[in-house]
Length: 169
Image (cartoon, rainbow, N blue to C red; front, side):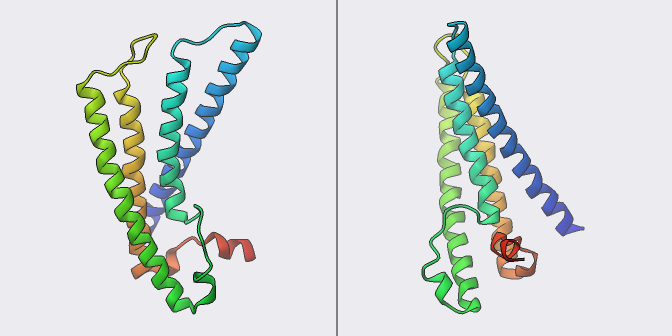
């Protein structure tokens, strides 16, 4: 039961990240289409697109961190025994957990700062803090998924979803 809940949580985070990819693509498509066909620019299009891209980046970090599908260098890892590969994986994941946790803390400070300073978009004067908050939630999700990955690497490595193994099956 516990494993199924974690897997559903992981899948939900990945679907949310995928939804933001679609939202950013839609925003870019509509903005370019209106600009090139009707010579019309959506108010705050640049600011909204920029903030959506930031949201996408942080949710993308969450989606790739658990699966280990981000960019890796396997020069040493590929040339050592499986036992040492696991140690390297645990160490690398712990470093990633530390870095993303610090990043999440500093991003929360940015959310609080934009809220307290009442930072708004140029055209429509929309508050920007909700965009930062959604990005921060993505970063919190990354911390949770990296913590789950660390737990599984240490205590239940058989529950890991290894894309390298799936590619060779």
